[in-house]
Length: 200
Length: 346
Image 1: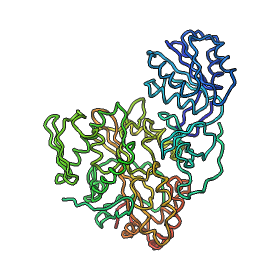
Image 2 (image 1 turned 30 degrees about the horizontal axis):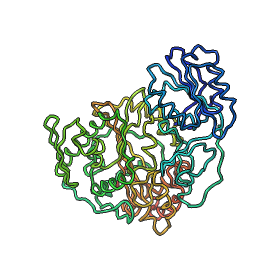
Image 3 (image 1 turned 90 degrees about the vertical axis):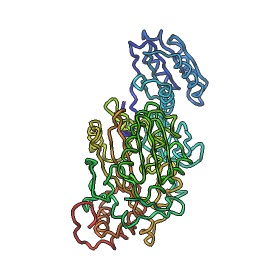
Image 4 (image 1 turned 30 degrees about the vertical axis):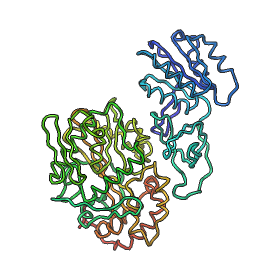
């Protein structure tokens, strides 16, 4: 875990199953499967653990899925993508009881989307753990058209919806699960500096 | 005192202007000739007669035009007014605070009659006459916060207090200096201040939060904050930055006096009685350089402050493109003489 220079950006830790929880829901994307596996392998919580998994975008590798299947948890749902996974999460949470804990791992934009949805479903922020795995891509909300762009790896980046070139501000909303994107050439149209890739 | 209201605009043809009385009432924010970064919180007690702080809530000649401008902004972007479901008690608290203050201090303009929970509100300049039941939102045309803040100058945020923190859980924000309620909604005090440079490392927000968590009912506090805006535009939101940002490139030595405005926020904080939430009000005042320099002391002092402003602060406030041009213009109004102590004009 490294200190975050962005005060509104969450700090991500290492997943640790909470022993007294009545129900565990682990939600992972791509390399996040490794974090879930490392946290839960051999743990007596597995019999009360549901795992929701989505392969990384554009990945055909089944290794992560095989890894999770080897855990022998209560149930493993493999989604076709993040949208599918979020829908499954909403269904799972609708049946969740007090004492449920969430464990999220994957890229930062994945963690943001899952956390935002869980908060929206009434899960307490304290009941959600997150561990960052995979590429340092960000989810960005365009402040102008309010559209979300996933998997942003550098700033500035074009908005996938309105096409404006967005500076990715050092400002993060947990409610939206996204960084703020603001038009970078508003004061000098067409002057767009070279994109800089995000570090971890 | 009977108020009269300007017919003026804060967009398109920008006809906004201050009368000589409004200029002298302007809350000039600089007590010294150089820039100092402070929290500068003081008790929100009555200031001099005909000043911006004479009454807790200040209604002035721009009232009707500002409310019209707010209505336009809301019609184009309803997300400027949002409230999380647990904030309804605080909304009623806010309605009571504003209506009570406005009716008490501007009785010829606003009237509030209360008979138990049966309230009667009259707003003469906006032509509104509303009977409603306090605590029953179905008796108002909008939620209580939206209803009353469509009729009161200034932006308003409602901060919920829990877990030793303050949470931005409701607000009406249409005259903001480049921050987004929609983005910051639900954030805590440290999170929504994340983009502000320097202050975190100076511990300013830690001290300010500690102070505000102990804010007492009946003892509101205030501070002044400032930036600069090209054209008298109230809606300098990030949402519309791709529309107004270009204005910053339009400043020339010939148009500084008319185009460049000092933008001052009179920020006040009140503890609310039922909800224990805090109202954070941000009242925006604009004054163009031509108007500012009618007060010799302010001309001298603002020239010196703007010239000595550290670059990171100038960048954060978004002044980079027009600061030098403005300093050069102001230098013609600074004869180098000493300035008198205090904020007030001579």
